[in-house]
Length: 353
Ligand code: FA5
Image 1: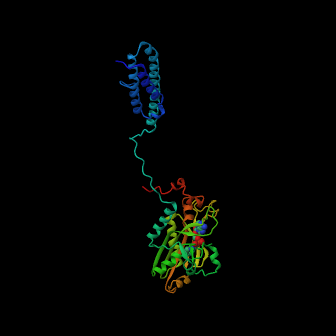
Image 2: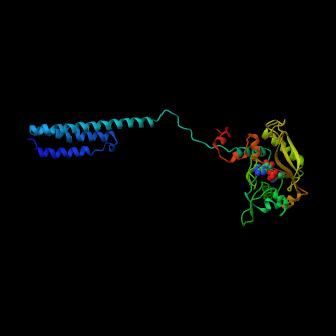
Image 3: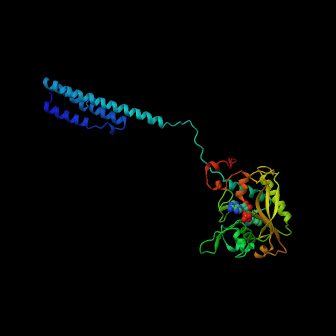
């Protein structure tokens, strides 16, 4: 029992509409394409059934409609085949691209390093600790008394202009211009004998920034107070300190200078690391590089913190961490320390395991 022609046509046209309405781009996987193929062309598929149904039609109708059904079958089969090739090649590509080599060792986790200035400060602290100094610290925001007054730098004294100061707006505070206020805090906190260092604290000055000056930089401060301390103790301590830090052939040289909080005061040079003291462009042919300020504690400072200058004496020094690191690591510009360029920073701290 076959179906009549109009029934066959209705079913065929519905199949053709469904086949024409198929947009190959919307079939995104090979599995979905396989299901679609079965739906139309598989055994029992819609188009297969139409072709089978032809047998029940009259010879005339078969001649007329048979080629239409065959050509729909051919064009659909071709479109399915084309889509299949497309999907296969894109799958190959993505497999190639996403291929994971499971035999490769895992990436080591990135680990931080110490900043060259931290390294420098740690090294200095280490040496001074071994010489009997302990670590002290003070706030970055200071009051006038600790930064200036107690250090024998009275208000309106022209010496304050030597260190151009950042003051806090409408508040009686300032950003410390040096680490020397830590001397005052240490003496307020504990009675002598004292040996303290402030290791690599930040200080702030309204300085013009250039290759050797920054507005924020770091200092290491050192203070020793005891009975009978003399300038010779300062010289000896600094000589041992500099030799440990920069090498046993390093020489130190003291030049007279002036700081309100030390008397006598000195600026200390070390023999140039680059030329060994022969003279080069870095040391401006002098063979020496200026490193730090130092001196014997001024009796006025002891009075300011309630210590008897007849009983106690001491020495202090303060040095710029950047200047030392510039020399030790031969850095051409101070600004490199603050730019956080990894190519620069990765050169240091290679000893970390
Ligand atoms: C002082 O700051 C004194 N407090 C040092 C001192 C301490 C003297 C204890 C006596 C006793 P001075 O202003 O010279 O001194 O600075 C000390 C060092 O800081 C300098 O030798 C230099 O190495 C460094 N320094 C000064 N200004 C800058 C700057 N703008 N940028 C980078 N380093 C600087």
